[in-house]
View 1 (cartoon, one colour):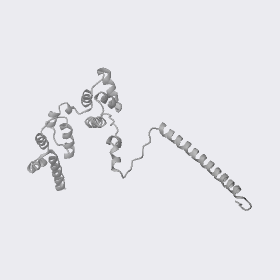
View 2 (cartoon, one colour; view 1 turned 30 degrees about the horizontal axis):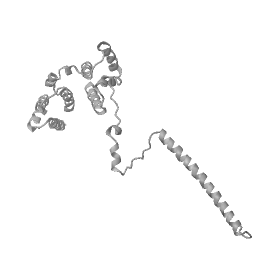
View 3 (cartoon, one colour; view 1 turned 135 degrees about the vertical axis):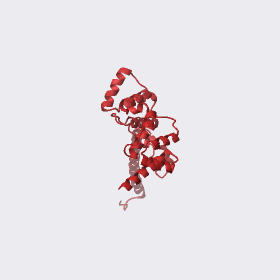
View 4 (tube, one colour; view 1 turned 180 degrees about the vertical axis):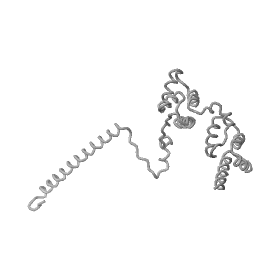
Length: 229
């Protein structure tokens, strides 16, 4: 800016003009910024309240995550195989997801496949709506082993025919169908069904609970197999 040959009054006027232009530009920028902020606030309001992302270093932020939000469970499908295992997994799902009794059979029916779905359509056609207890009983009678109709009798007749692992699986499937059996009774039943070369050694060890009894039986079987080799 050339100030030579200008009076003080002219110089002051020119400075005021320049300052006025800068103030006008500042007002425009300020107004534009206010418009942008208003539009942003409107977008936040239309999409719900804005929340600050949780701080991973803040232990309090982890309290907002519940197990139901962290775990995504899928309902088990059923095609007629392993009905006892399927019923157990279905009931675990109902308990975890707080599914009310009136919705349990309907939810389960959505996950039936193949012969199980065909059977369910036939069953409801003749019997109408079922409770979960009625439904599971019908499932076990239709798709379970015939021994499951009287698990107490089947458990007393169960014998080890192949490996201890296979015998254990059959034993657990039957024993889970009988409520309020004392563990001492289950231990006696399990030992009684073992073959002589395993049963006698297990009795000598005198295991204190069913888990120890099964573990000892498997170890003795493994030892016998190694000795045969």
